[in-house]
Image (cartoon, rainbow, N blue to C red):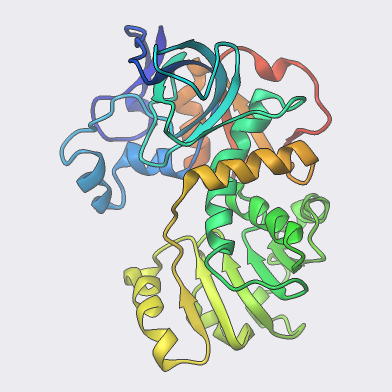
Length: 334
């Protein structure tokens, strides 16, 4: 089978497409034919081994897993003798930020791992584009005592995570104020944002439209110090990144005891619950993942280069079987 392979850390040019042996499922495993997978920030961090702490998990000198990829949408191709959750032909979605080796034509996965069936009418590229964003967005939101009608600011509303945050907040009944650039205002309004702030016109931390119950920074480009003034008493700041000098981790430890406004650092957990939610919202039409670009496997270096540029809107995908060739108006391709 074809797979993307890298044997050393480095820039996208270290990636190559090679023929490797197709895996055989064990008794409790399923063999999945991968139809689509994203290239995301986690994939890029694993490729570069940056921040350096990544090496303690992915291999200190060289990568432990030589095929990248953390999510997939595909079809169950074969099952082990003890598998009961899935059948051959099931369309499935999976995610694991520690790595699934999903940038390949096939992969094997224990049926007990985080995986859901893709709802009818949802294409593989749509499903794949929902996994990472919904998982991190779900873990942002379930770490705060959000109530219906509360006012929430979302910085980075056009990313895979930020766009999912906006949609999940609206699903929960929040009043969402989203931050993006001029070219994406209509796109973010289409996600359900009640108000959109254009950061190219004015620093969102300086725009006075009242205070917020929560500020969610989905790109990690702001800070608690800048956003503290935006919060109501008892409000919280949540970021997807550790911040300068890992400050968000330390703020999360101390602000609950020494400040009327606190920092919450959301350590992601329970991937299965996130995928269950993604499947539910895809089925009801309440989740429409943003898709920016779709690449073929032979263009893998270009895909990583584009994601690393920081210019992507929503998701970037690898399409293993020309699933993007069918027009679909629900897919937002920039």
